[in-house]
Image 1 (tube, rainbow, N blue to C red):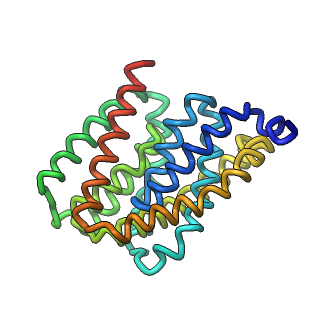
Image 2 (spheres, helix red, strand yellow):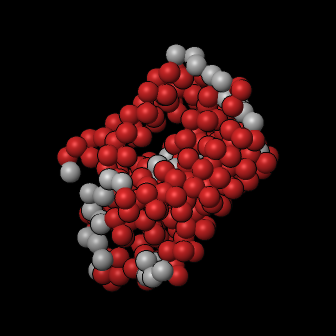
Length: 252
């Protein structure tokens, strides 16, 4: 077929990608994060990493736009920019460490830590003392470093917000705004480095149609959920994604 020849995918593989994106967009609409983690896990069965990253970056930017009507009034912009400053500093550190550390061992260690803290939080642990400028800046540095080293940069920010008992609506809005800014930056870098090509564009365009429906459904679930339910869903999601990452590392 004409369209699939441009996609450089079989119809079955592309329909599988559509399903992954649909599920990921529902999770994004509910959590405010997790889209990339789900897409990476799903796409990796079909595409090499070099082709996955630009697709996800482009979709992350677009899905953030679709989320604006649902989150705009709940974004803590001061928090976002403090974290962003740390990420800008931490990202080069992560890329440097990538050359000197084994990324799989680091990824494995981070997944274990995320599982540990998620279980701790489920038991009722919280700490308001770290909810200050230094805590946010440090979290941003950790997030940027891990993003450059393992692509798990969103996890520390989500954990920080959960530990400090921020309201779910603010967590979701702030995470979505933060990822929008960081993904625009990453997508521009990918474009000028030649990673984004016309095949990427052809694959992204039909997938965009799926995003608003998934976000709409995810937002409906969020509106109907209680704060305790939201936190439990996020905890379980973090644990599942971390376990999935560990399994993938052990199988490589």
